[in-house]
Length: 268
Image: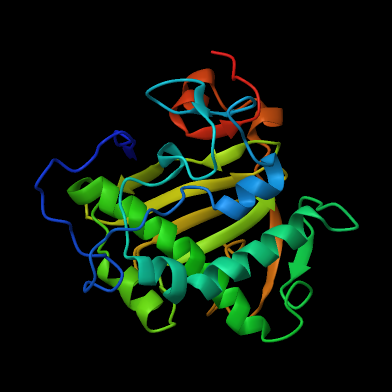
């Protein structure tokens, strides 16, 4: 298993050439993408200040003060271009922002094992908007792959193509579920077999909800029936159990390894 946890404080050296955006491969990569969507942080945690900061904990250090939602520590070290970040992927961001809000603020709280129909949050253009949610997670996944580099043998080209053409990635699946109060994005984990088959995944946690994002190489792995994909033929998805803290399956070391954002200092 490969666990990618790059140094989040890495910055380009003076005089280094600005790399191209991995999405369009045309413009300079000069725009920072939040690891956890800014609007998600604002909706769940509110706005930090100099007097009342949030705290960011990762593998390198616990309780790093965050005094602004635009703090560099909240953004991925891999950048994309401003056009792709603010214009091209804006429909994807808005689709996830809407679905996130609907799942967190339902009149009836989510129940593990129940089903949610996509036409409830998206009564109009359901397929298009659910596909936009898929593309939102492709953008984050692509940034994580660029961080990992050659350590994770997953081609970035298919992620770029899906975003550029308003398509989908045939090997990236989502699971939606209930979470137990954590806010953050896990590290990317990748498994390879002796015959070269690749499986990878990571978890996006947002207070009461979470999304598991998985890459399963076609022809090598059989996706779980609980996975959702735009080509599955249905916009209904099952609510999975991601309440790892209540299950007592997450160790202290694993918690420290996954980046988290909290309103009060985390215990070591």
